[in-house]
Length: 490
Image 1: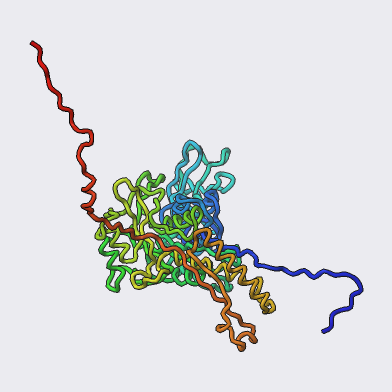
Image 2: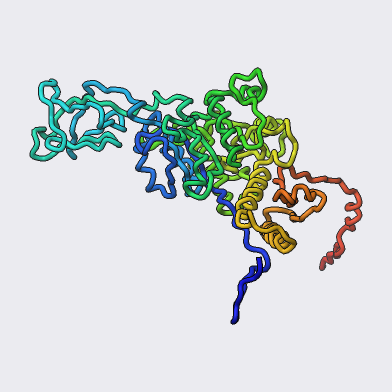
């Protein structure tokens, strides 16, 4: 088509040189579990501890509140939360539960998450009088707190009974956690992690399902999701296992299904002990949420290419059972667990309690560099960042200038990563042999690149020699002794 006629002056603007490649978010935790509150089967963002309240109290049987605290104990971060508990589906009834108002005119029900859309009643102790909500009493259904209304029919310090339905976490099944597609065509359960990018512009990169990931079905489903969105998933061994049982579980004859080999699955043992303020006692919790929190902390403070290993675990007071740990003993239990591809807790004299282990469950079946957690994650981040960056060049006209622009941007990204310490080296190039005319004419072009993240210094060896030549430095005293005579007078 001929150029349009112009009698005058015009400017045609072109962009020369590359543009910056933006890194994808890495420190985002994905948490699926149960809570007394929060919209069920919705991907909810949590970015501060003040956001915890929407999920109700940290009550027995629920997993989200305690897991959020486990993560934030390491360092606050962004968490994509999925609560699968639907109180209209997962509920139980409490009949004639005794309640008594205290001096503050309040009483707390045994179970939080009262389902207000289902039948409930507050009655006198003999059951003959039914009191009216908002006239005689008010109720905070999320926390299960009943308050007496002054001037109502309930006397101060009264003892009453309550009939109500409540959100029951014991009714939740692994199928609810795993999720799927519902009748409305919407994702449920952990499948909602796939919506992270379309909803918020980033995927969760550290996936956990505390207490649920001990089940083979849930852990296997988390592995599928992790591979779909280039994330790492952290799965726990169940409580009560001995070290030999945990190690044997890596084989087909084990008592649990730890028989997995996947670069994006991290296996954790044992449970850790945490002080619970509600019960004023130590309780056992899965390690997975704290491990994800440690990796998130590393991402924020040092970089996603840093291993989570040898980092102090904040907020715990011990482990379910002691793990023998010596930095120079290949036969200690911590080393045996690592040798089986299990991340554990290291605790020796004066070291505190530390996460210990660099390798995913791919080890020992795989000895490729990507079996290291930090190497696999670095590769994922680089690959995904380049893919997202290249969107702006998709459907552009292929030319030498276009190719140079893409390569300049990609190589600038590699140089930046090298300067940060994320990679030891990397480059992108155009290989004509991989771009035959038959492919180019179909609009398909191939760019090549390579890189190498720094592996963790997992094993450090000193080679010591006893050098007898140092004996030649012995020369005796250079000052010598002073002999004196003693003269006696007469």
